[in-house]
Image (cartoon, rainbow, N blue to C red; front, side, top):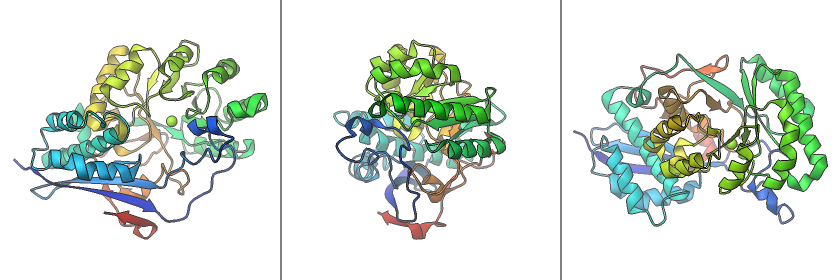
Length: 390
Ligand SMILES: [Mg+2]
């Protein structure tokens, strides 16, 4: 039996070129404070965290996280690493519970749970390497030939640019698309019309035989939604994502009782958090992010919980840890997929840190049965464009 020898957390600061976002790029939670400074500030980030868990026998499991990397690194170094070093990685359920319970006073959501997630994902990658199997084979195996993926970009832009982007995504074989709203309460009725014009324009390109998802990234409020949703309905969105702030569970539930399915969960944490969402009938699609929610150990439990409620799970973000969970659960019908792109918001950074992420082809992707663990490695291909904090 091998034991965990060390845990290494690193922060990757992107110093390379970035694409500046256009105006009204995407609504977000900061919009409510729109007349007091830059509301995009909290939306863009150009940092990532990697977490490497090394076994005494030399194998290294890799986890990662994107939220508050500097704080997450400090939490791992000071609190979580000492709780797993010297232990058997296959005792993952015990190790998860130990990390959770020893930091109960402050670690349950946010930075603490993100740190637990990064360590847990690395432990799963390590277990896969130690037994020579991909992680999805340890979770339930293959439940689908390939994973359908949806094209996730279409940030709010000019109608022409959005139509051109939708058309090129359609040409690449995608059959499902997610677009972002750029206008919210501060933009009044005129902004509502701008939003609707863009949904109509994208539908014009992708037709009505594809799935179109729409996303507000917590930039609206309940009052705005009550006026906006009836106008949206005729465009047949598969779901409306995070219409209101993540803590407003009652707001989600009120909207989800209407005809447009409401999705959310990328800012929710742990099995207990999702039980609250599901009990409240707050969402029609669960969208945890494995590297926030508590890692693969927590996400696997939430897949089963949501299945009992007959609510599908479509995790937030592409990323290989989410794909392994999607592949292994019959309750996960598809995956989000960020196309490879220049660094813009920051959620593309993982493509520059890792190699081995599966590529989407014709709207599907597959996982390599021959690649043990999660199947990704840290690459130095873009090392010149990062400052790394050890
Ligand atoms: Mg989202």
